[in-house]
Amino acid sequence: MSVPCLFGAHDRELQLGSCARTSSNIAGTQIAFFARSIPNSLLHLINKQQVLTLYQSLRYAERERCRCKSSMVERTSKKIEQVEKPGVFLASHAALDLLNTEWPTAAGTEDFFETDGDVFSWLRQTGLAPVGVTEVRPSGSLVRAAHALRSVIRILIEARKAGKRPDLSDLNAFLAAAQSHPQLIWSKARTIEIQTSRSTDTAEQVLAPIAVKAAELLANGDFERVRRCDSETCVHWFYDLTRPGRRRWCSMATCGNRLKVKEYRRRLNSD
Ligand SMILES: [Zn+2]
Image 1 (tube, rainbow, N blue to C red):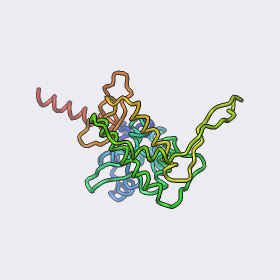
Image 2 (spheres, protein in one colour; image 1 turned 90 degrees about the horizontal axis):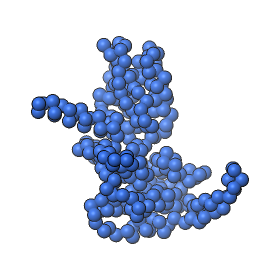
Image 3 (tube, rainbow, N blue to C red; image 1 turned 30 degrees about the vertical axis):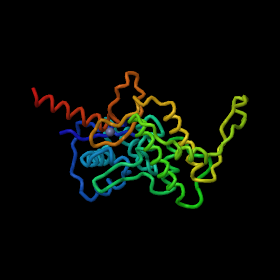
Image 4 (cartoon, protein in one colour; image 1 turned 45 degrees about the horizontal axis):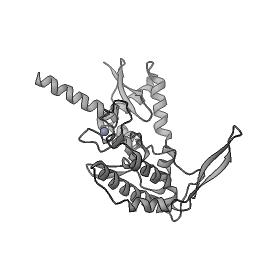
């Protein structure tokens, strides 16, 4: 009998396999508790069976010191515990990752941005957070502005993808709120560099780098390569950076695998 094992795949992706050791049953309450501790953004990508498998593999590695993949299992386990609220970054472009912070569920819509802290956390993970700023006043203004900016970018990207000529004034208003200027600084190598210095007094100013990313995508992006995942149940956007330009899925480890198995079964049944 084989036991499920968690493999550390690409950054922030989980991949499940198996190793030849014996498993044991785990109480349902423990599994439910564990599932709650997995961030919603990850739960969207893995189904209930995978949550159970993941739980089993982590418990198993703890108990039995699984020899085949224990170091990988432990590393991934620690990663899940330590990261405060990991976002999903599959899109290969920050503006499209922003659209992927909201997704439909059976109960309605799930949103990564629930508080100002969630927005800071997401910006930190994209590398776009302002250095040394952890708060914007008034409280709640950052999450409201993030929702508004995301709606504006979604409308523009969907329209551009559909070959329409959308009104740009709402995104231009966000860009106008961003106050920045070039600044000379000494680098470590004792050369002089030009950096962009940004004001970070308002929510719109904190979000300015992502508004700029969206503007760059709309102006310079190849919209043949801006796509949504091929899975019918997935809403993720991505920018196809592969050389042949044939990327179909947000993630090979989740939607890609599911669809490949489905297509394989369909081919098998039609033979
Ligand atoms: Zn997908």
